[in-house]
Amino acid sequence: MKVRTVLLLLIAAIALVGVVGAVMMWRAGDGPLIASRSVLEIDLTQGFAEDRPPDPFGLSFLEKRPRLRDVVSAFRWAAEDDDVVGILAKVGASPGGLGSLQELRDAVIGFRASGKPALAYSETFGEFGAANGGYYLASAFDRLYLQPSGDVGLTGLYYEIPFVAGSLEKLGVKAQMGQRYEYKNAVNTYTQKGFTEAHEEAMNALVESQFAQIVRGIAESRGLEDGTVRALFDGGPYFGVEALEAGLVDQLAYRDEVYAAVEEELGDDVEYRDLVTFGAGPALGLRGGETIALIYAVGGIIRGSGGYDPLTGNSYVGSDTLAEAFRDAVEDTAVKAILFRVDCPGGSYVASDTVWRETMRAREAGKPVIVSIGDVAGSGGYFISMGANRIIAQPGSITGSIGVYGGKLVSSGLWDKLGMTFESVSSSENSEMWSGVQEFDELGWARMQASLDRIYQDFVGKVAEGRSLELNSVEAIARGRIWTGEHALENGLVDELGGFPAAYAAIRDELGLAEDSLLRLKIFPRPRSALEQFLDRVSDLEAGSRSARTLAKLARVGALLRDLGLPVGRRGVLEMPFVPE
Image (cartoon, rainbow, N blue to C red):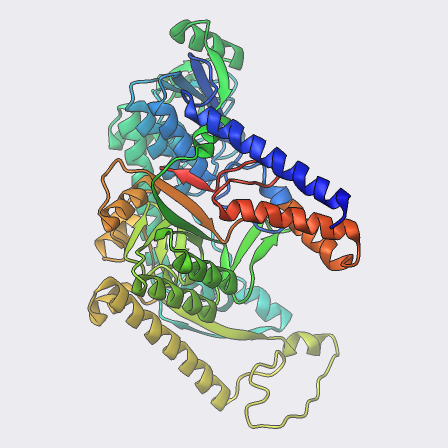
């Protein structure tokens, strides 16, 4: 080994050990380095990430968004830290779906239980637009300030569904699709020109359930009657003065006036700190506790590996990646249980079944699987969840849609308009079944319908097995229908309502641990930093280069330190993949 290589490795090792030592000394003291009278600030208008994509390109888009789990934990740590005297949040735009909003509201309410004030201010709740979700979150705070020029955009919920069947007709495109069954309404976008009776029934039930939850939350937080809040929605939006008169906000004030009011209440000696940065302090602590695997399924599920699409802002989770994560968690002797966080609208049946099998294998290996549903676990998202020991959802989480649809769009009419023709040759009777310019023949249509039947029966049967329900009762709540979490609980599709804290409690219960015992969350698959992936590329492209070999060796040193349980992170600094809870 060259002297230069040895020196590089030695320097890297010394640097890493030094950082480890600093962190251990930090945590061996009295806690995070924070002023004794601190007000923690957070911007709740920018949105959060459930998880960060593994590829550097996607990471560049989402890296600055704090993870929802980290924010929830930071609220809890702030409640327990005597140096924190209050929280001040900027609110306004909705940072996520209803499940995420309820997760954050629970965290705010949990912080308020410590007796410390949770204050919020907003420039506006919607400027020529609605802000129902943003206000729903804001209402959880003790006191709410609104800029005098701002509005409170309470206008109520609505779902607007596009139907393109008429457009397809004009284009000469025919949708040949089947569904199981009448409530599997995603297919209606292509086959209908408006709501079917079942589609309208399901959507009305969804809107009313979610709206009732929002009304109930605002009423409880603001000390109003449910009927009063419903009437307020009917009359919105409200100008600042009107919102103040209606009891929707506590004071009209600009940002500087809000900070002056905070210091008048808590003292002018307070210091302001970022809540998320504060939350990273406990996360860096090398603390004990049973190790729990944390596996994320965020985005539509596909076969193979997932990724992030910057054009649509959508993430995709791959069955290969998830299956490997489960296998690694099962093989890790330190891991005692698996927390499976699902925020997935659905996707491939085959990919979903692959992941379902790994959840069952984990249970067979004696490692309980607890599912925590975020905003949605629909269709394939519920498929990958249904085999867990326990499923926990927020009241507003979209859950279920036990069903399937499939088919194709036949575009021959469009090509006819353009004067384009197609000819083909084939080897077999059903070779042209999936042609985009030929309709299903009798045999092809029969095979497609048989495929839908097989998938639906498999789905229903596995729900019955996983949830310990009778087939008939599953059939009654399936048929492709979506439910909110509160209705899913009534129907036996989930076990409990709540978020991460409820999931942690379920894990402790499954493992027979004390309610206040520590848990260490270890993320699977281990997040690979942009630097690591770059080094891999360098090693691949310049395998003969001494510098590439040296960099690869440095990467292996980092990997070794991780294997030893030391938190080496994205930028070559310590970053704890184990979060004490």
